[in-house]
Amino acid sequence: MAQRVVVTLSDDIDGGDAAETVSFALDGKSYEIDLNPSNAKKLRKALAPYMAAGRKQTNASKRSKTPVSYRHTSLAPDPAAVRAWARSHRMEVPARGRIPKKVYEAFRAAS
Image 1 (cartoon, rainbow, N blue to C red):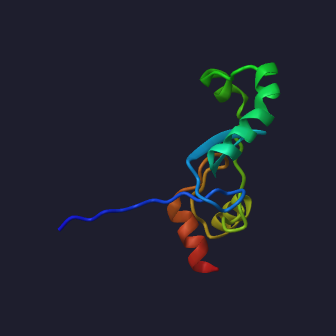
Image 2 (cartoon, helix red, strand yellow):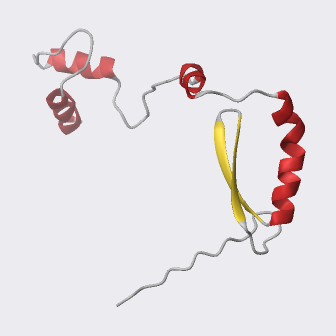
């Protein structure tokens, strides 16, 4: 049995039929928009002066300028609280660095 899948693009500006998906980036975020030829031309015309004045970013500069940040979410227990709890229950836990998974599991089970 054969199957045929048809993808139809709708213009994200006017809702009509779109001919292409245009990718662009601004402020470190990438976007895609489906556009008909007329709207794609308008977008490119609007961006042309900025593209002409700007410079292309190389892969190396993308990596070096992209900050990597890590943060705890409200879903993860506070590591300081887990360490204090583990010590009060006479569990071995390092003073710094990664807390073993079994300590987190015991902490969650006790909560």
